[in-house]
Amino acid sequence: MQRSASTASTELDHVEAAGGGGFGSEHWVTIQRNTFANWVTEVLRARSAELGLASGSSVDLQRDLGDGRLLCALVEQLRQRRRAATTGVAVNAAVRRPINQHQCIDNINRALRAMTDDGIRLVNIGSFSQ
Image (cartoon, rainbow, N blue to C red; front, side, top):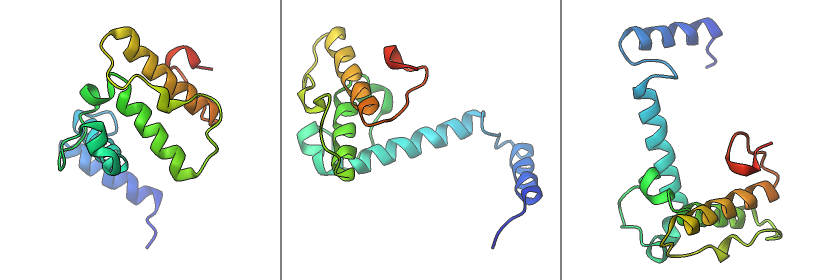
């Protein structure tokens, strides 16, 4: 069953009127954050022991992606899923146990470079933005 644009708009108005908020509301942001964290956890499930993730727990985006280690693992996993040739930046050469801010930034930059090598256009993200 396909909904009309006016029906969808009316439903959104009801959600906002009920305090559910729209796309910019804190509730919506929380739902999106949790959804993304669950997706990252699912993608990295096969490597959870190697990455030191507790089984059954979800990734904390700020804490776990902050040092770039899991971000590199996520990019590696997605590249394997696409069966893409691993040319360009070697994401798997990331610092596995970063001990300072420079190593964390290097890990994040390595993941971002791998994404740009794969043709993903990054906007307003680091020094790779176009």
